Length: 212
Image 1 (cartoon, rainbow, N blue to C red):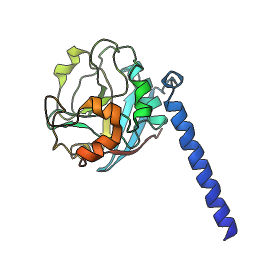
Image 2 (cartoon, helix red, strand yellow):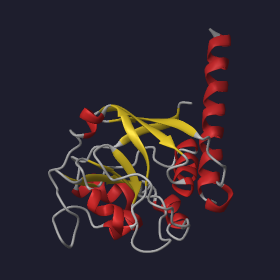
Image 3 (cartoon, helix red, strand yellow):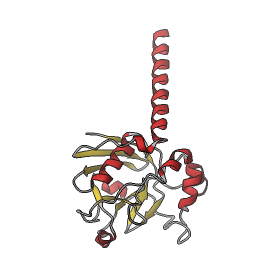
Image 4 (cartoon, helix red, strand yellow):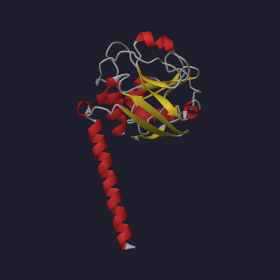
């Protein structure tokens, strides 16, 4: 029994140390610049079930590298799917801890050439203009190829579990001020505390991992 307790205590220490290390990494975006494999998969365990994204680096190298580093270092863990618009797309990628999300607001990556189309199931970084992509991504529910000419460059595709992505809670609609959904500025500054209080039905990422 004493040996079992000691083993559990040691595992708890290792787990805490790993979490602390991940948090330290996430506080320094410039250090998370590992080149992604040519192809890889990311598995997202969510409150609705699991889905898998397959990434092809050739489609959008800068986006594929950023996504790889975010997933590998736990950035998406416990993040909410804060913008879910039926028939259009689901958006996520703001960390639930404002202290973590803050340094990433200015951690922009260069644009990629649009080589794939924003069709159903394809995943793309959100952008507000040239070279403005940071951490927010969206998955297309339908064929949104009209986004291609606006510079939205897909870097991968959901290859398993798209039927679960379709079921992510969409009741709040578009975000404020255009709609009744979450205000992104408040999500950035107040994190999950804000969402849990005012938008409790939102689904969330439980854990995201690189699987190969």
